[in-house]
Structures are given as C-alpha cells and as structure tokens.
Amino acid sequence: MITVFIIGCEIAFWVLVLAGLATRYLLRLPKLGAALLFLTPVVDLFLIVATVIDLQNGTTATIMHGISAIYIGVSIAYGHRMIKWADIRFAHRYAGGPAPIPNPKHGPQHAAYERRMWLHHLLAWVIGGIVLVGMIQYVDDASRTESLLSILRIWSVVIVIDFLYSFSFTLWPKKEKDNASILP
Figure 1 (cartoon, rainbow, N blue to C red):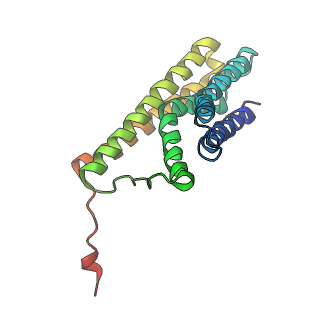
Figure 2: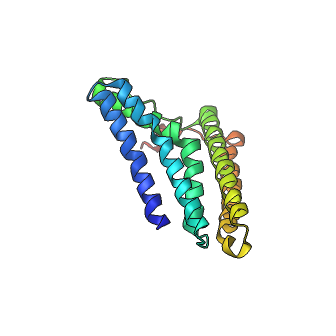
Figure 3: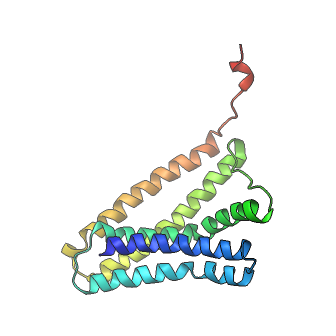
C-alpha cells in the first residue's frame, strides 16, 4: 500500500509542476500557475500522513516506509531547485526565455557547485533522518522499526561517500581536457 502511495506522490509532484508551468507559460495565467506550484509541498504532507497512519495501524516498518522519509527529505531539500530547473527550461522552450546556463564542469566553479550539491544532500539527510527517527520513536518497538534504522545507517554511509566525492574537487579540481593534444 505505501509503495503505491509513494509512487503516486512522485507522480502527483511532477503533475503539479507540469500543470503549474503549463498554466504559467502556455495559458498565460501566472498566478494560477504559481498556486499550482505552491501545492507541491502538500504532496509531502499527504505522504507523511499516509506513512504515519500505516505505522499507526500496526504495520511493521519496511524499506518503503524508509523511502517515504527519504522522499520527503529530498523533496524539501531539492524541491525548489527541481522546480526552478524545470521553470527555466519551460520558459526557454515556450515563452522565449533565456537558454539555461549549464552547470560548471571544470575548475573552482565546478568544485563550488559540487559542495553546494552536497549541502543540499546534507539537508535532505537531516530532514529525512528526523522523519526516520520520528517514525522509530512513534512506533516505539525496535522489532518493527529495524528497517528504518538500517536505512538511516546506509544513508549515513552514502552521505559520507558523497562528501568525500564532492569535496575532492576542492583539493583536485577537474581540469578541462586539452582537445589540441588529441589531434593528429
């Protein structure tokens, strides 16, 4: 049940984003478009309520309950950025807006970009971790929440690996390839 709800929430998020952007740029109704985009966090609220109700009904927490916490953390940490990404592309394609600026691929700008992305990941981990710990405390039965604790441990390892990767560009910046050296 919770798996279907998570998938439904992901679909609802993108439907609201696309509906908001289409309303804003194709129908030329910017206030209605903004209202639809503003509704995207409501999807997160529905997901957390459904997860809590599922656990309240005595369900043993599964990986999917943990994924709902990850989804909420990622949605809150990256949601605005994802909507802005889509908005820029939609405006360019359908409203004559400027072309999207690509992310930096080399040098100190790339290192700074990677650090910012890690900070978003850290925020997602903190929010998702709070939700996971909240679920564990709410259920208050270690045998029913083992998978939630496992997810938090795995995600903690992933955040450390991501830190090492992201901050490695600060010490060893990615250099632009010299195309002249590969010509005959």
